[in-house]
Image (cartoon, rainbow, N blue to C red; front, side, top):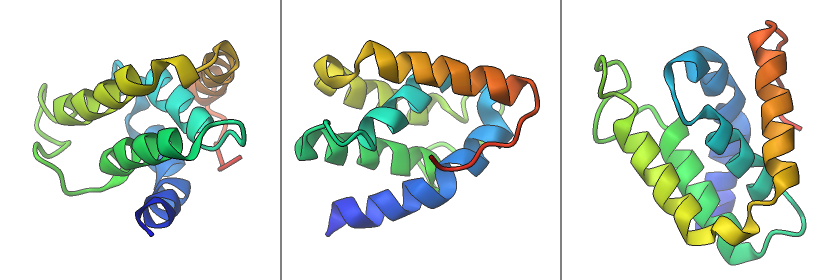
Amino acid sequence: MVITSNEQKVRSGFWPKLARVFAAIPFAEDAVAAYYCAFDRATPLKVKGILLGALAYFVLPVDAIPDFVLGLGFTDDMAVLLTAISMIRTHLRPEHYDKARETLARLKKGEKLAAD
């Protein structure tokens, strides 16, 4: 099943990639909130599928514009994620963003992140 495959990719690759690049991406808060929404038990399966697909695209090393291309590397990741978020916006709750802000604050302090 595609959701299971994307879920495995996101669970194993999201936090390491975020830790490497969060300072360079303006959409870090949205990405982390999307992660928490995707793994929230209350989130409908269709919404999880959309978010996991977008987050898997962010995690995968091969994409339309390589991440190392200065100034452009994350524009495709951002477009995919923000498109997914616009499709499911009503399912992203304030607590997902609150937890995202807390997580990013910990990351800025140098704390090591692990999958929740």
